[in-house]
Length: 313
Ligand SMILES: Cc1cc2nc3c(=O)[nH]c(=O)nc-3n(C[C@H](O)[C@H](O)[C@H](O)COP(=O)(O)O)c2cc1C
Image (cartoon, rainbow, N blue to C red; front, side, top):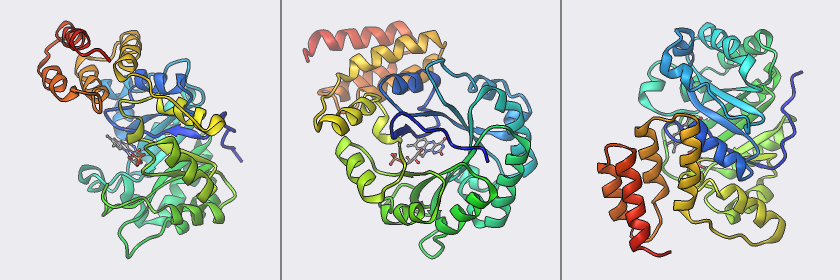
């Protein structure tokens, strides 16, 4: 069986469309993320060699191991895409958790959880067709009357999945309510392969509490890392020493910018990240309004420099 690698730490960066670009991932990895993953990529777009999608296959040398997330409804399309990308990655994750209408209406994302047997077939076929480990990322179930994460996790394990990540909200919940960590704990108790818990970790304290109570092998962090890749260092420090500090967010953005230039990230993405990095800073609201108006890199850096001049932090 293809095994999930033993990672150096326990906090993994969760895939986020529009956020986890290669520069952002490299920064999270620098601060100690155990693993990084591309955002979800459409299998058919890969198979059609869509230029924009192929650009998203780019990784940074610091990313190790390298995980890619694919989505799709057709087993043949997903397997074909997996075979195309496997030479450039160490692990392939299949998105079985996305609740967005434009994804589930095609039968992909969390919709795959409606057909556990078919999902098992997909994993088996992927495993036979590729040389690298296959993981899946699931939700709790479709709605509160159809919670089937444990059933799906067992089927996936039997089909040869190397690890399972679970964001324990239902498809119907989207992002409302809370991730059900009691369910995550149960999934962990039922499986032999690594289980990766996910949902609502925003501080090192959240991380420690959920790791200890659920006994999962790893935890995925998504929204908690937006505008604060340093959270991975904070978690590491807190787990080792019981304390942690905050790194200035604009300094973090500066580091992001250097990596973004290295990877030729386009301006609209840099601008969106700039806005993310100013959330939670004093007087950041006004800066965000100006950043949103910026039309090019020189506008954007000018706004940030002006802000720094007038707001000593
Ligand atoms: C902006 C955004 C984009 C996301 N894109 C993806 C994605 O491409 N693939 C995926 O599996 N999950 C995606 N997610 C879900 C997250 O990976 C994660 O499962 C969810 O946000 C719960 O974790 P959190 O509470 O730490 O944010 C996305 C979430 C956000 C906020």
